[in-house]
Image 1 (tube, rainbow, N blue to C red):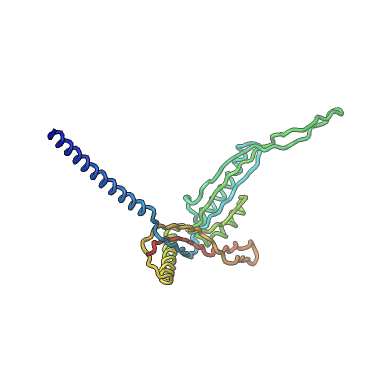
Image 2: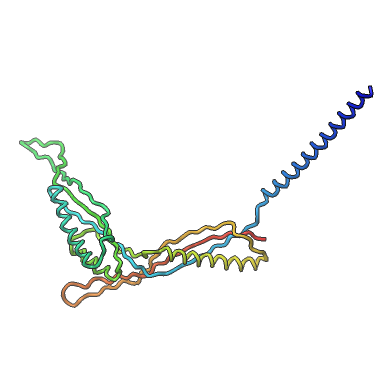
Length: 261
């Protein structure tokens, strides 16, 4: 009986220890999870500022675009007609100092040309309708040109018009290497946002913490052209138009978000 009693005491003691350990582990887990839950759901207070930066620059390249189109009875003859005008245009561009690498064919094509002809009445009978008749072919070639000497744009465009090209478009003035200007505009925008942040933080009586996010929009070049001018020569052919280049504006708009304390 005494042995039995001692076994019961030992069993009760073991169960009691196990229960205490279980309760201690459960309480610890509950406290840990509770603290973690409060930490994860506590969002930091933030404030955002926008900044704007601009850099002005004079364009150093001009892009023009033209098309050569010819109609003829056969595809071969139509393409030959295009080739004649193309040679004149290329010779002019090279004479004006345009490099081969800056002349590119954008598109070349040919397609049949039809005419609608009414049906011929014979001996008092007139067919109900006419028909489409193949009368020849149209060949076309489009060329884009990058002009690095922007002062010669007017002269080049006038010369191309004389060679017989059609649909002459441009010039579109641009800056050949914009990356450095974009970086300058971005820095100005960031500095603008930081100045605003310091001023407002002081007025609100808060301290700025770390930056939590950054975004940028813009970097779109905008051209501001001066008023156009046209010179005319006394006698003979008119002088080429003086085409104003104006200035391009490279802009950047940024938004910076800070933690506040």
